[in-house]
Length: 255
Image (cartoon, rainbow, N blue to C red):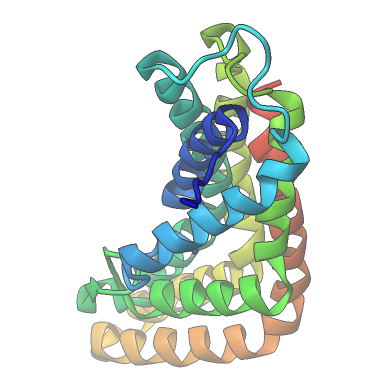
C-alpha cells in the first residue's frame, strides 16, 4: 500500500511569509548581519526561527484574504528590513562615537579594512565594535532580537503591511538620538583629549622650540588608552541599555 505525505497548505504558506520576514530582519539586524557569519548559517538560523514561529503565529495559515504573492513577499521583506535597519541605526552610535575618538587621538591615520564588519575603521572603532559584539551575545541580546520578532508579528500581522505604517519621523529621531548617544558613550575620553589638545596648544605658544606634533601625538595616544581603561566600567551599563532599547526601536518604527 503506497504511503503519501499530505501537508496542509495553510501552515506552509504562513511559513513562507514568516521566513521572508525573519530572513530580512537577520540580514539587516546589528551583529547578526556581520560579514564573517556564513550565509548558510544565516539562512539556516532564519528558517529554523521561522519554523519555531509557525505554530505560534500561523498554525491556521495566513489571515483570510492573504495569499503568497510577490506583493505579499515584498511587504514582509520590507517589514523585516525596516525593523532590522532601525535597530542597526541605533547600534551604529557605538562605531560613530569610536570614530570620533580615533580622529581626536590620531588613530584615524592608521585606518584599516575591518573584515569582520566589512567597513574601514581605525583601532578604537574596531575595538569598540568588537567589545559591543561580544557584549551583545554575553548579555543575551540576541534573544531580544527573537523576542522582537515575535512582537513584530503582533504589531504588523502577516500580509497586512502598508506604507502608511512606516513612521519616518521616528526614524529621524532615532538617527538624532544615535548621535547624542555616541557623544554620551565617549564623552569622558573626548573631554580628556580636548583638554590635552588645549594644553598642547598653550605649550606650542609658550615653547615653540618643542616638537609639539611629535610629542602631542604620543601624549594623546597614551591619554586616550588610559582614559578608555578608566571609563570602561561606565561604558558597559550604557551598552546594556542600548541593547535593551533596540527591541523597542525596531518595533516602534512600524506602529
